[in-house]
Image (tube, rainbow, N blue to C red; front, side, top):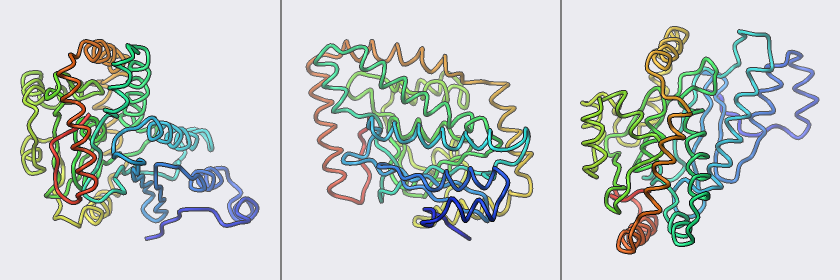
Length: 317
């Protein structure tokens, strides 16, 4: 397996000489990018793009993380324009994981939400929510490339972290991973795709039951429900992803086309996600002082969780 993180010093000239066609040049530019809140690897043997989330501070979807995710997705999408129509872009699988041990992502930026709500900044909440669902939707449609997208969950995927995982074609989770939508604890609902993705997979009744319960689920429970595709032993999540790719790469074309057909038959559109963000933002503005105090306590719990790794936490944004 070959992982490439950065380009050599004289990379542009050397690679241009070795690979005269535009696809490798685009790949070289892609893997030379550096992001403040992401670690990226390109496994050239398996044609896998690895993205590991590493938000600064609280492990949530901060504006900085959303900015970097959008930039990364644009760079991947540029591969589609680098060669002739229908050409292999050089990335067959996209894997989203976390660089933080024990935590995939704890969801929305609760501290930012509290500030916006206190300031009556409805437009700010809308802007944040729409930036989040645009990134989620690009994952959902695989950046309009013939890729299979995989979420690797090693730890807690809560609130927006769970929504992020649900947007992928497949979820691989280590046995101790925890999933949940605890927004109801502060009188809100998960507004970045949970209803859309869960209702497609489980039906409206089960989706609402999960959203309104606020409970935390294990990887085994979600595997039994059909939401998690592979459960791996703890510490072996990356090996499980690589094994899945090795066993299925022969049928990559069939699999990627099947997932594309799934999205066509039962689509989750960007317009739908944006409309739900409007509902979420308006509901957030109606939170009471008591609700906001609960949100503050959950934010503090997230901070304690980060300081006391490892172990699960039942809070999210």
